[in-house]
Image (cartoon, rainbow, N blue to C red; front, side):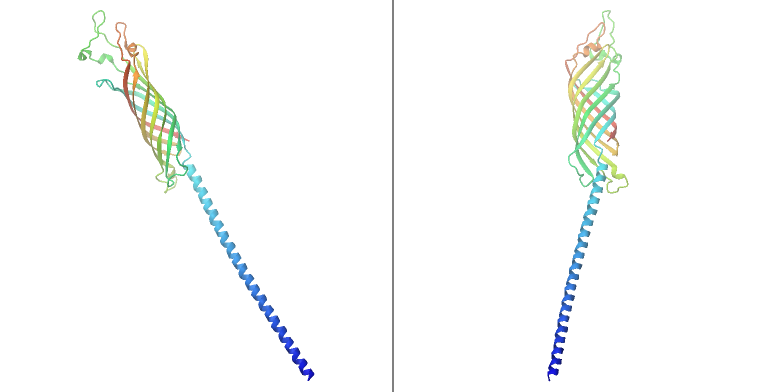
Length: 294
């Protein structure tokens, strides 16, 4: 009897141990599964973080490359311009006065464009302010042959002491203008989206106001200069590719010049001619330009 109960007790003890072991095993497996799930979640999170960082780095690299590319396209801010000019000079106080036309005229301009915004609009448009530190123009006008003037038609005949008709000397006019120009400008890269090097091609336009000293030199028997302050206005268009540009510019201005000494330039041994103290002259010019931009 006692052996029987002892056997039963041993069997129950074995069953309890087996159940305990099973519970422990199940618990370990559950913990392992939970740990595995946590590890997988952690790995997934790390992968997602790496993907986000990779995309961020790719976007940063792309943005940096874009900025560097735009900087190359728009790096030319300073310019040096030479122009060949067709210039006219008109005495605005005398409607019947002959308009003088240039036989040779040229210009030199040196300046810089200051952008009003760092990033181009749509990567294609930039608006700025041009400032020409030097804006210089020179013109030599075609010789005015006074021998060809029929003074009798004007009711005026000049005579010398011997009663002979007096011929006036041939006259040559020169003009020099020196000032500083400022005004708005706009540049567009119309083929930016095409690329292939065409993004460096720009079309530009500007309007400048140029406060200037202007001098008209009259060369006859003597050389005399008439000076004035003159505000010139100009507008222009052009095409630029990297460091080189060609363009067209139209320029005009009007001022009163001190022409008191012009009579001395055309006087002869037998005659003196009085000149007006103030004479209004209008200057108009059109020119073709070539620029170096850097």
